[in-house]
Length: 279
Image (cartoon, rainbow, N blue to C red; front, side):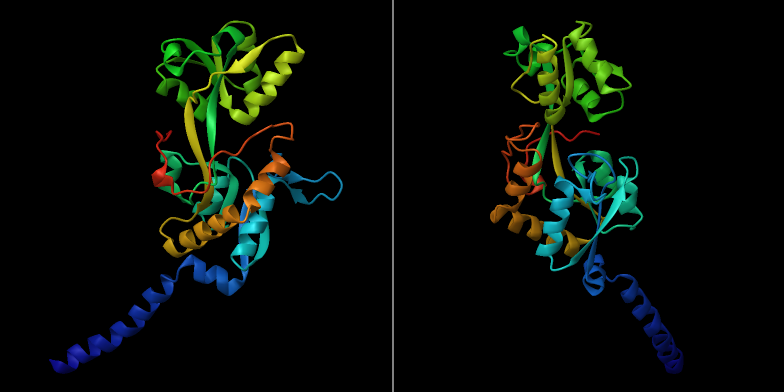
């Protein structure tokens, strides 16, 4: 009997070693490699797109990847991806991290894990000038346009309004200009550009002050990798503290760019934000 127990113990050792090796964390693998594989958009300016002269990827997310790799003491390998494939590139472990203007949603949170957000995007309601001073509640039950299948559409339902959807943002925007709807929902960056565009056409638009929804933007990673998450969060916090994120922001989407965006929030835990996650 003792011999059988001893034999079983000896046979179990290689199995335990195999399991231990299989559970080696992603951060250890990345550090051993000495390189951070960072997925970014292949062609979505101003976040990541080819420079017309050099054909090298440039943009806000490229600079964020570069700074993050530096803070982690790693070389950088950019991995271009599409909007449609950006979650899969992480879920299938083809890339270590994803920096692609990625907003936290309930569905994405089940597929990958998110870093602390480095800014909070907002779904904003564009309206004709006379309605600018109204509140989100004033539009309950009203017809509001958005691009079909987007978080903008979801935010309309959250507000208790009626969504009128279109295949593209230009058509949804035109519906507002033609008074087929009382408002049009899109992200702040797009909203600012469209307000400027409408003014050139003689149409006065504005955004109501209250956001329709908040979308924390963070770095995407594989689920159940606490060491990698902690390292990325530490890197983002260091980039925030030394002004790196602000410099990158101002260069690509800041007040002196066509997007005229102001970065109001600092890097903070997702759990500290008071918001209703979109699906």
